[in-house]
Length: 377
Image 1 (cartoon, helix red, strand yellow):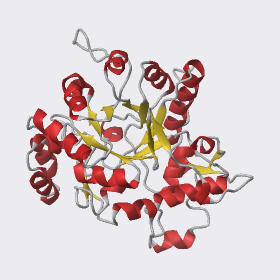
Image 2 (cartoon, rainbow, N blue to C red; image 1 turned 90 degrees about the horizontal axis):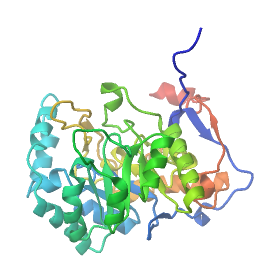
Image 3 (cartoon, rainbow, N blue to C red; image 1 turned 45 degrees about the horizontal axis):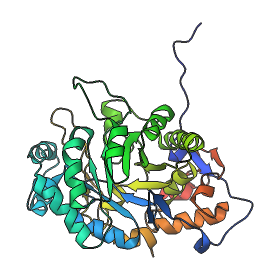
């Protein structure tokens, strides 16, 4: 019987394992620097542009630790003069009422003066400032953000493509925006080779990979759309390699979402990521504005919410989440220590060598021989 269509097998973090290398390296000697345009970061980590994760204070702190936090220019920080009061209201809301509250909170207009004010607050502290906008508001807010001193612009939506059909006679054209904007532009989110290649050819500096894997996101349940992160990252990394061959310009691939432990983070880099974007795991930091709660960017959609508020708890200071020391054994702290250890065991001296580490399909990797651990839960 002729087939209607082919279905391809895709893999998530829990279904694969890294294979040790033939040579090992002292973890302190591996290079984990991440480059984006002319900027270099000692930590290959971005904090997600979510209101429960990033405010100006956390952005400044993460910069001091070597990473990059992304401020949501369409969130609570730019809608309210006193965002902490609104955050407290969301945190204290009953579960049955929180979705309606989020819709109400995010229905208030964005204030352009607050966009500049929040960016300048980060810049006055000497920190690198990255901020996120949606495609619909990119033209309106980019000029304000650039004039305020932004260093990196991120254009982010649930799914981003290089071509978009709408009633607008002239939509957002990435190639024109990249030429007109004097700062690196990261675009997301994307999960496939062809789209990633088209976006790279438009001149972007980085691409966010991931649709629906985040802890607060329900896109996969509501819309049925998504690709598991290992496969999505590998496909976009293949586009990066093809684009580098044809142009000589390197575009960063950033795995965004679904990373719960140091093991997941290591697998993201082995899948081809140059950096990772973290949300829920950083929402657990003492310094996070969500104070132990987390909600997604799509949660307040006026007619089709695709996210929910979750309680992640407060686990440790931000520095401890990245560097330890840790007293937990579940891989949720000392993420950078885990990355360095994995690179050393796999013989990867830098992140580009980590891209070449062998992987295998291993769906039983987290359960094999773990009877007593599983029984204790």
